[in-house]
Every structure is written in C-alpha cells, then in structure tokens.
Image (cartoon, rainbow, N blue to C red; front, side):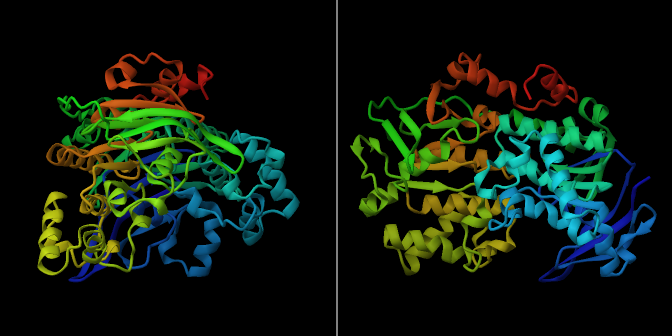
Length: 532
C-alpha cells in the first residue's frame, strides 16, 4: 500500500463560517496502481487529489482524518518535511500553458526539480529529460528541451509537463484533468504516452477527470464522487458495464443529449459568409482559400485538431486578424477587415463567448459591472432601464439576479461563470455569436446545461452560432451543420448527417475514430492499429 487516506474531512471558509468540502472520504492506492477520480464540478476531486500530496489550498482547512503516504501521515509533518516528501509525489495540472514559465527553456524547467531535491546533477537531469522526451514521443528529443513553451503545441507542452513530473522519479503522480483542453487527435497521443510512461516506471497515479470515456483508458479502479462524498468505487470494467448508482449512470447518459431537429428559415442570405479567405501570421499562411456560410438561426460546428485554423478563423471574422485575401460578409454586406474600422453596430452584431471564463471575466468587477458595460456601450442603457435589462439577462441564463449580480467572478462556479460569459454576449443583442470551446473545461453535467441553455436561447432569439469545438459529442448534440478543417483548409462541410453519419471524408473518419470510447480496451486497440 502506497497511499491510504482515512476519513478525510476538509472545510472551506465562506460568508457564514466554514462549509464542508470533503465529508470523511477514504482512498487506498497500491504501488503501480492508477485510481480514477470522476464527478461533476464541486465534487471535491481536485481537493482530494491535492490532499494526497499533503497540500490544502488557501481558504481550506483539514478538520479530521489522515493522509498516509508510505506509512507517514503527510498532514502531521512540518512544512519543511512535507516539502521534502514531495520529491516522491508529482502533480500534472490541467493547463500546461499556465504551468510553465514562458521566459525559461523547457530543459531548464525540467532540471529545476532534481536540483531542488538533490536527486541528480545537471548533466544527469538533461540525459533523463532526453530519455523522457523520447518516451513521451516528442519530436527531436535531443533538441526539444531547448525550445520555449510558446514554441511547441498544446499537446506537446502537456506531454512535456508529464515528463517534467517524472524528473525526480516519483512514486505517485496526481493528474488533474490533463487532456481536457486538447483536441481528440492530440488527446489520444497524450493518453497513450501517459499510460506508457506510468506503466514502464511502475508509478502509481490518481487521474482526475469528468469524462468516463477518458478515465476508462487509464484507471485500474474508478471512484465516483459527488458533493464531497464517495458515490461508489469499483474496478474499471465493472464500473463501465454495471455501475450500481443512478448518479454514475447519469454521468454517461448526458452524452446522449441531442437537440431536436429544427426547421431553419429559407433565407438565401446567410448571417455570416466567409469567402475565399487567406490569412497569415508573418509570412506563413494559416488559412488557405477558406469558404463557408452560417445560415440565419443555425448552429455550424467548426471542428479539427489543434493547428487546423479554427481559432484563427474566429479572429478573422471578429476583425482581430485582417485577411490577406478574401472577405467576410454579415447579412450579405462586407465587414471591414480591421476591428478598428467597424461601426459600433457591426461590433454589436458579432460577439464571442470564450473558452476559459476564468480569464475572460475581470476578477475585480462584480457581475453587475461586467454586464452593465455592453448594455451601456451598445444599447445606451443606464439607470432603471439598465437594471431592468440586467434582471432579464440573468433570468435568460437561469441565475437569480438578487443572489449573483453583486458577486465577483471568483465567487462563482465554472458553469456559472460560463453563463455570465453568455449573458455578456447576449447583452449586445447580437445576430451572430462565436462559441469558442465553451464547454471543454466543464464537467459533463454542467456542459449539458450550457448546451441546453444555448439551444433554448437560439430558439428564443434567432441568433446564429459558430461553435468551435474538438468534442464530437458536442457537435452531435447541438449542430445543424459541420465544417471540418485541417491545416487551414476546409476538408469537408455540409449538414450534420451528411458529414458525420457516416463520415465520407478520410480525415473526418479519423477524427471520429479518435474519440475516446467508454471501453477500457479502446486505447489498446488504437495503439495496436498504429493510430498513436
């Protein structure tokens, strides 16, 4: 037995005093075993994962229980001894981009851990880095570490972080949603690399996720949590085939959400028309002869792996990146290429909902201030008229204005913050909204609520959506049409059924095959097929 957590109780400070976060949770982990932790936002997964390292976030306190690592209670150690023990425990965060120092080369950041813990010399650390970069299937392992974080892709950076976690040869690694923000083709490579390096090193792991299909590929056992309590725990195959609790079954059932087919207005003029667009960063074209339409009142999903040009397309449409050639039309009229040249009404008509609500909302402004800005800027509303519209917007996103308007973003859950991002876009009364990976960082139950909300708002307002996503389940749930992109070009496009059921283009077929399935053997088969 490597890790044994007994009756762990943790509380968080709130306005009314202290609120329970973990209600007496137990966890056991053997050497070389992988435990999957799954549950919705607020279940206590990350709190439990950090506690396994002897760490409790600011604003929380331990009120009972033990965390025994190799027989030693981490919670009873001094800070100095606990820090020394962390040589044997590593952590891999959800966002690799936010976890690396942008001013340091990757190899320097890798070597920092062994230096601090005195486990290897600089030369030994560099040799280990090259070996681990090769094990993680990173390109040119001998030179890869000389790059800065911004010079590698998201998937490569995520694998580099796993390699860095292995730098001190830990006995335990805590993976906290390490593939959530990755596209499906990148995700499969990262999952395979993580599993390979963990198996070869015999390292135990806690794998935190909200996706049953992903955890099925990684874990020997799965523990389901909700509201700080264990719902059930079982071996992976048993959990996937015969969960005993309704809540566990509901975690998978939400992927079956499908929007009802709708009759779109027969309008020959689309809300947005992208026509023959070429766009470049510097001298390198990243979009090549891109053309597609987004009909009025429709949802068009734009899918493709990292680097396919999805977000660049959004930048062109919003005027942040003027195209080198081609144009974008709004309701049949050309939009000025540069944001600065667009009228206030053109700015109002095209809005955007961002992937990470944490960074998209000003943490120092209340929700009232955040939503009041577009109401005043675009609609000229002040005083009573503004307050009335604020209440209407909060009702639209199903949040109580009396409870939430005067809160700061940090006092809201991830799903609530994303709803505020939706309300901010709606405040301008736009005709077209770009939804950029708006559910990728959310658990499946919260994501389903966001999709249902967007669907209802579209029915009520007639707004058009461009839905950028790498989640095929989301595409099936909400899209009317699909545009498949790769290397800045359109590979396939058309009605959802024409593109996906069955997929006709080889690249679309590969995208669908790369979607993790609720089958513990799925990744093994994909590796055997040479797909990874």
